[in-house]
Image 1 (cartoon, one colour):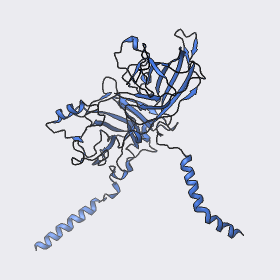
Image 2 (image 1 turned 180 degrees about the vertical axis):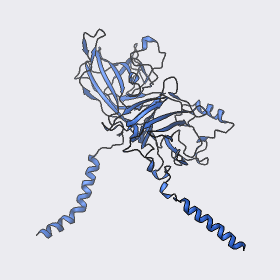
Image 3 (image 1 turned 90 degrees about the vertical axis):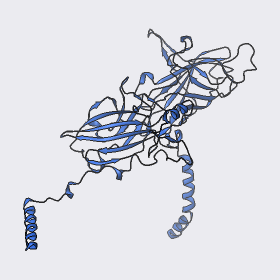
Image 4 (image 1 turned 90 degrees about the horizontal axis):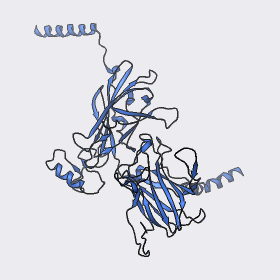
Length: 455
C-alpha cells in the first residue's frame, strides 16, 4: 500500500513542483528597489488639502527625501500624475506645469493647466517672492536626508478645480511618476492617511489639513541606467600592482559602431567638442576615453602601516565632461570603520543599516572647499585620507582585508574589481631562511671548485 502511494506521488511530483513555482513567481514581489545599506530609503510625496474652494481645493504638495545618501541633482525633479476626473489646475505657487494643454472650453479666467496628465517642475532660484512658498524654488534639487536634512524637501502649492469639495467627493490622482532628473523611481498608488497637523508660529495653536494622502517612490539602479556609472580601483604600499577598474565596466570604446562615445584628453579639439555637446540638453555622459569608460572612478589606496594605526587615501576622479557633481557623497563599507580615528578634508557620518554593526560610512566634501567635484580635467578630482586604529583581534592585510567591501557614489553601486585581482600581501613564508653558516659553506665550495679547475 505504501509503495503504491509513493509511486503515485512521484508520478505527480514534477507537475506539482512546476505549479508551485509558477504560483511563487506571481506571489513574491520584486526586490530590485531594495537597498541593503538604506533599507528604509524612499521619497514620500505628501498631498495636503489645506482648504476648499467653490469647485475644488487648495493643496500643499511636499516631497520628502528620506534616502540617507541619494539626492536629486540638477536639473532637478519632474513630477507627473493622471487626474481621476476632469480636474484642472487654476493656479500654482512654488512650481509650474511644463504644458498648459487645451483650455479652449474656458472663457475669461484661463486655468494654469488643463491637461489630463500634468507634469510639474520646481521654480528656479531668484523667483519673485510673491510666487514662492516654503521649500520651493531650488531648481528641483533636493539633498539627501543624512547629508543635509534642512534641504531634503521640496514643495509647491496647487489650486485644483473641477474636483470634489468634500472628503467623500474628492478622487485621488493616479499613475504618479517621478524623474529625478532621469528614470529610476517607481511610485506606488496614493493612500489616504491621517490629516497633517500644523503648529502656528507662536506655538499655541494646532491646525490640520482637510485631507491628506501619501505617495511613496522607491529607487532602482537597474531602472535608472543600463550600465554602471562608477567603478573602483585599488592599490597598496605592500604591492607594486595597481588594480584598475575592470575593462569595459561602463562600456567599451568602439568608434565603428558608436563614434564619439568618448573624448581623448590630448585631443586638440577637446574644448570645441565639450562646448558643442554642452549646448544640448542630452543627459548622456561624455566621458574621457579610458579602458573602463566610467564617468566616475573611486581609487582606494592602502597608504601606510603603523604600529597601532593604518592609513588609507581615497581619490574620486570625474571622467565626465558633461557633469559637475555638487553635494557629492560616497558610501563605503569596511569592517574597520568602527575604529575610524581621523578623517582629513571630508565629512563623515556612520550609517548603521545592521543596527549595532558599525561598518558603513558616508563621506562627503567640506562646504566651500571640496563639496564640488568639477567636470573631467585637471580639477576633476577630490581626495582625502582616513586613519584607522587597529583592532588586534580582526586586523590583517591578508586576503584583501584592507580593501572595501562595497562603495557607492551618489547612491549608485560602483563596480569592484574581482577579489582574485586584489593586491596580494607578500608571503614571508616563501622566503628562504639561509643561515650564515650555509652561506659560508657555499662560498668555500665555490672557491674550491674554482681552484680545482685552475690546476
